[in-house]
Length: 325
Figure 1: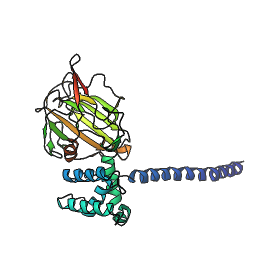
Figure 2 (figure 1 turned 90 degrees about the horizontal axis):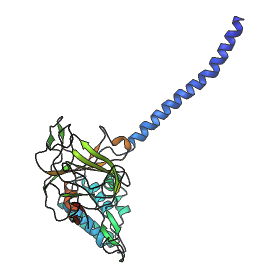
Figure 3 (figure 1 turned 30 degrees about the horizontal axis):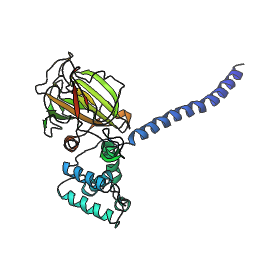
């Protein structure tokens, strides 16, 4: 009898062991697969394109839009970065101009120019993550009967007609709560200055944050950009009726400048200077949304560039609210 049960036990082991091994290797395989997948996206971006290079590339894009060869600004910027190691000194403007002229003359193609450049694809993906859908066809909201225009579709975060001052403060130190670098761009102005949605998207965050005070977080439609607007006005920080989950359009008024924040208690003005903290986070994988993998870019030159396109707003005297004109 004992021999019989021993044989049965051996048979069960022979049947179960392969199944256990299969499940174990499957879990390991899944873990390795996830690990490989997590490695297959960009981990960091140094967005250091100069203001002059942004302007030049944009002008080339617009002026060649209806030409036989359309010189698109993102591939041109990526090619330039791949040639210079991401260095956008004044000398790169000559390289960009020469490249544009050769492309328009059909002496070369962007594909031929970039096929052997090691880091071109990296810069192309990184810059597209920042500038995607910034330039293209759009309908003028004031004149919908005309054909579509082509140019900037996004706006400065500060409304037209409202003064502000700024400088490149990305990476400067901050000490409230803990020592850390400043991962955004401060734009100093007056209390109540209307704050504008740079591009269309969905409101993902709205409310109090002890570091940012009253703040708004908006996710772009392609999900790769998260716009952060902080230190909004005390008592009435947001455009009337704005709430999480709302859809906003590029150029809409979303809130008002203030100096709230640096407090665990809500609605407190603990920031010395009235300003908008404006930040852009890049998200290539959802694991980068929060935590140690966050990618925030220096957007000083980008805000300088966007200042050429500021949303016109009008005030409703009855509600004292501002809205896009």
